[in-house]
Image (cartoon, rainbow, N blue to C red; front, side, top):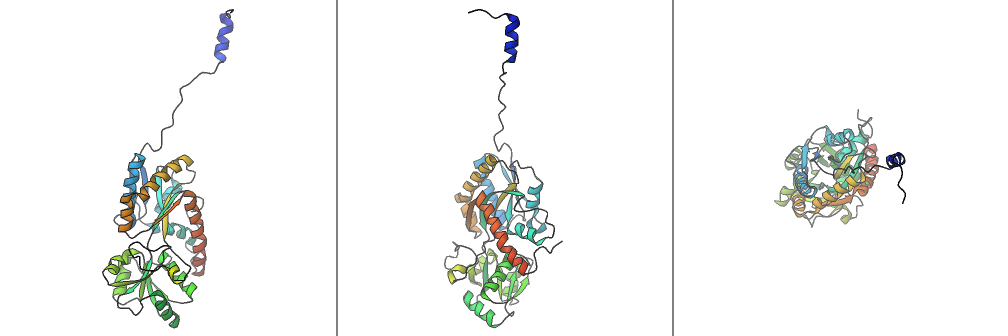
Length: 324
C-alpha cells in the first residue's frame, strides 16, 4: 500500500473530528431540596410534611428540608415558586387557599394555572360540621330542617371569610335552600370555644374538633370529604345522605414553571413512595387526614376543576376579584 506524503497526511488528519470526553450532567438531586410549608411549625400540615420530607430524603439520597413560611394567607410558598428557577430544588405546598387568593385578588401575584409545575396531589383537611353533644340535632338533615324553618337564625363558626369551611357551608346552604349566619373566627380554638360556650350553634372546621368528638363533648354531624374517614367510619359524608357535594380542602406539591420532565418524574416518584410509606401514613392518620393521591397531570387537572367550582361560589358571595 503506498504511503501518503506527510504534507498530504497532516491536513487530512486535521480535518477529522476530535473525540472529546463527554461532560456528564450531575444526577438530580445532588444537593438538598427545600420544601416550603406556608404555615407555622407544630400544626397538622407541618407535622405530616416533616415525616414526608424525612422519608423522601432517604429515597432521594439528599435532605429534603422543611422551611416554614407562614403569613400572607398561606401564599408565601406560591410566591417563592414564582420567583425561583425551575431546577427542582424548591417545592412547595399548593393548597386551596393559594387558588382562592388568586381568584379573590384584582391583580394576583401569580397564576395557579400557568406559574407552577404540579408534582403530585397528596392529601386534604378533614372538614366537618360539629355541634355540642347536648344539641337538639343528631344528624345533618335535622339541622337543615331546623335552618329551613328558621331562616338566618342558625349560626355557624368558621376560620373566616373565604376559607374552605366558609365556602363549603355556603355551598351546602345553596344546595339545600337554607340560609344560615356566618360567624368568622381567627382560629379553631376560638370557634370551638364559642361553640362550647353556646355563642354559635355549630362549627364547620377541620379536624381540630376531633379529640372533643372522641371524648364526647362534641357531636360530628357530617363530613364534607369525598370519602369516609378512617377514624370516624360511622360518620356519613354528604353523598351518603343524598347531597352531591364534597370539599376535601385538598393540596399537593408543586415546583416552578418549566421544570424538566425527568426532574419532575424523579420528584413525583420519590414523594409518591413517601406518601404511601407506613411512617407517613401513620402521620396522616394521627392528624385525621386522608390519602388523596394524583400524579402531576392529575393534580393540575384537579386544580383547574377546583378553581372552576369555587369561582362560582366566590362570585355569588361577592368575593371574586375584589381584593386589592
